[in-house]
Image (cartoon, rainbow, N blue to C red; front, side, top):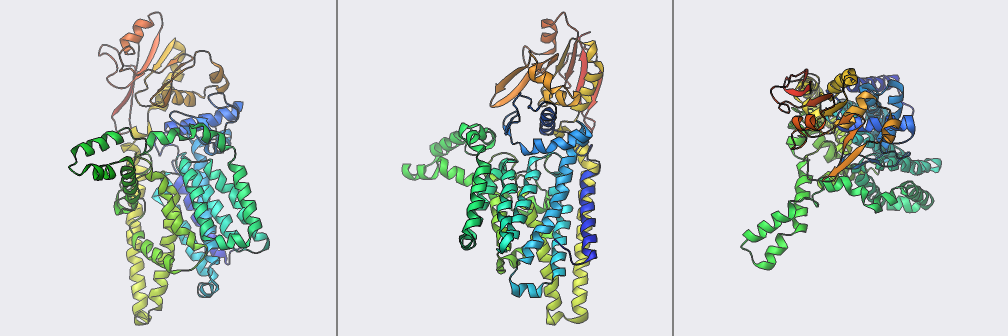
Length: 578
């Protein structure tokens, strides 16, 4: 891709540099700690690096068994280089999303530029190459500073990696739409990143096939004209997807879906029965209205539409504290009018490549609408983010262009209106951007360290320094999965963990937990039979180190050390039986 001017290259480099900075600055401490998913991904990557096997002893698996699901492989294998270079630590884990998050900004630039280059000849005469580059730069800049995208590329989230591959696949595919000679090969090549996206994140397993199906329908004449390349592309995708078939047929693929699905909600049937019993409608009408299908349709529609509300997009964003910085919307305020205008322009245009934006946006919210937790959800809908940036950039360009061309606003008056609009837009952006940066780098880590399972690293650091004094280390599972934090922060030898004789796992409510391995024991210290006094009594001949939450230990026990969340609230207390 040859850019027409040096200034375009300069601005693109500046945008990429800004993107990298916003994602890498203080990345080891903001978010305030690695959560259990990040540590699980990282430790399994470390295990593959050291032994070729995951924590369960499976050799180079395509699916990694985790707490309540099977993790897809791309994020884990993709994390290996960062961990190999920088070590099993926060930077080694998070440099991977920082890099592919930054590269996603570059991919969006090339994708939109390719889309604009595919505009009808009549439109290309109006929009110069330089103007097309400006629009593409604007979209890339908006993604670079996007609160939605920044948050999910500062931590090791699979959704942001799947977006990277989808953007690459779309760029290749749009290049192939030119339909001339060797360029058709790009359509075949696009199947590779599209397939990788399906191996990356669960939402992409729904989005990518649906999107490709819609694209095939929209461009049926093109694909029929180029049957050879279409057939090759289809066969390649089938081959790449073949390893998934045994996994899907086994039912293990639905493990995560069952935990969050609206169709598997345990309270659904009781609610339906209650409505039927309280209804005064005739029996037949009552059954037609109150049934599983109508309720699932209602909840799906409600979940879907929630993601298009101003509150989610521009005011508060998603409520899940790990997925969103809080205090700002997923998009900036100033984007709202330009986004709507960009959508209007899109519906008027007849560009073959720009036509994919609307199905891209609408399909992106289908996977999340089938779930029942954390609605609206920023993580499962990240695929939609580039569309919003493209529509905003297109809206800004055509707004400025149309104002300039209005005869009634010609001359000084027209220039003044444009100037005032730019000033107001710039002020709104500056205020909103400041609020976001202040929330992200100042308020967020202090207010939400609990949500990021802060304190586990500090506790394991104490264990590492003092474990030789004790026969047994007891670490509460009140906050989640202490075994994975122990493995990660001790850099525990994966080969030893895979073969250790006293490794004990158990399953409760479709959730797999590790109860003990080596000298480490992970009970709930609040349960009968596994409280402090119970454990001391059962291990009277052992010196025991205890890690629990405040209130887990009798008042007479001396606290050796306390670990607090960053807001000052108590997180852990460390005691022993001496």
